[in-house]
Length: 537
Image (tube, rainbow, N blue to C red; front, side, top):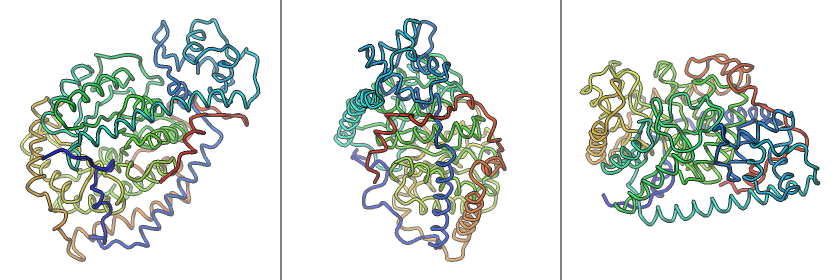
């Protein structure tokens, strides 16, 4: 099919929205869910007010261009923030100290960082300029960098429209060799066989590192380290492929963990199109402190929203630890919360790719109908957003033929419910990390089903009072009750009670809590100032 330009949400402009509900959903119940989610998000805002984190502060330096590491391979952003943190003065914000340092020394941020790393400069011992002068200095520097990044991303969007890309659902393919140069080989092969988005899986447990490694990497475990240099290598490789083949291919990474906002800004700097950016994943599955995560996700989403990067939420992860049938209401509740938190951070609806997954055990009678109900429910609740649909993985038993059959049903549901981003399922799921030829078979399956059922979504209707409608209505009603309970108790309490994925976390525990800082009354963050002024659609 000839490449063309598509909207950021993966939906043709005339197809945005679902019109009348195929599921006969009660508009009052949907409105109640949205109201409860807004109340929950407001509670989160109150909880994280007057707090910052070391990763938030490092993000300011990243936008200002700090990319390298010192002689001990400690990233300069960590060196400078740690320098101020150790003196107990980070409550004013790293922007305050960098801005003052620029005024007092005449040096640029990178030069200041190198002197701090060499032990030749103490930022906190310099004379202090007027607050207004400090704010203006660092804000102007950040604004200039922001203009450069925005201009580059606008050129990229124009180029993407000129080159064109495949129609939705965009086929989202993972690569995870551990070696960025080998990842490039896989990514080009994925593009050759019809992949639309290449997601470079991060090395196992990188989300627990409180720093972003420097430079290209060739060794990783279960994935490749997310670094600015690796981002640049992958982006340049797929741009070269697009120039040669006349079809744009998007690139995605994982914007979560202890460096969530840093990854967001590095992705924007290097022209990434998508980021997995869930509000709760780090809390539930990496035991990162709740407050730390909620602060970091706010800035990471402000950055992604400001630069029009599509974020993918991670509700599919709940179904790895909880039964898909029982957990369905919590999935929908989380979708509402994730969406509202993103909107509060300035992300447009068309840039919030809601997480969804095909994970009911295949031996359950009518499992296909139950999956249809959940997929269509997600599609109707968030009509202006793409949906990132994940294939079956949890119950794949190593039989590649059964897995391929399950993936075929998954592909059919994806087309029949207009999912926007479709992660491909591979026949060898559950056996080993897929080889290139496994991904080729998977992409051929997607192409076959996409052609055979191209207009399935336009033709399909669901019987009034039948299995699909009744299931969707039941799940939505249970999600409403859950959301209203969370709104009353607060999100932190709900997580501590195991509302999501059957995982319980204590609000006062978790990794990274030592990196939370109470802000001073004079705290200043130039990124927040710049991005808060951006118009929200």
